[in-house]
Image (tube, rainbow, N blue to C red; front, side):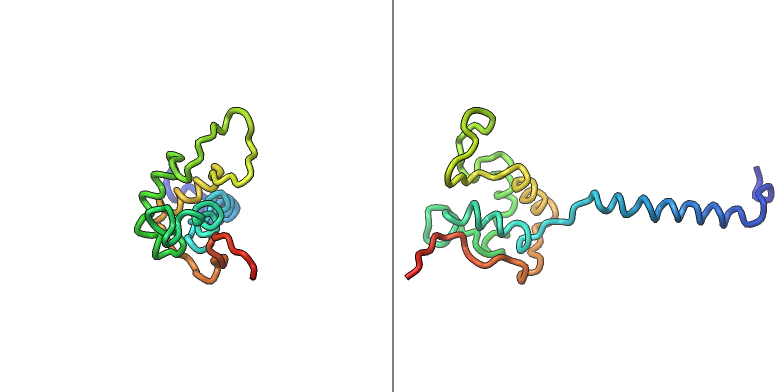
Length: 142
């Protein structure tokens, strides 16, 4: 077929039809793509709940994970240790026996995925004002 064999204006109609399809499909694809995790919003709460008991200044761990500045230089190592489940140390077989433990410091699959995606996404800090307060340390009231 040649360009002259289509009725006049059909290319405009075709472009409108394609645009309409894309306007419906594109948001669906965007909804399936999770936002890049940031330290402040996504990773810091995990570290506070599961890591900072040991990873704080003058504690048993070799480095602090309290601030972004503390954690960022270690991002690739954190990813490797978390993805292989070497950290946090939790040597209970998750597929056998008792599954709920008091003071369980293990990471869920979603938490591991969040940390891995944070590192793979360039380890962005995000907005520090979205970060939870606290350090994960045990505190006593006086």
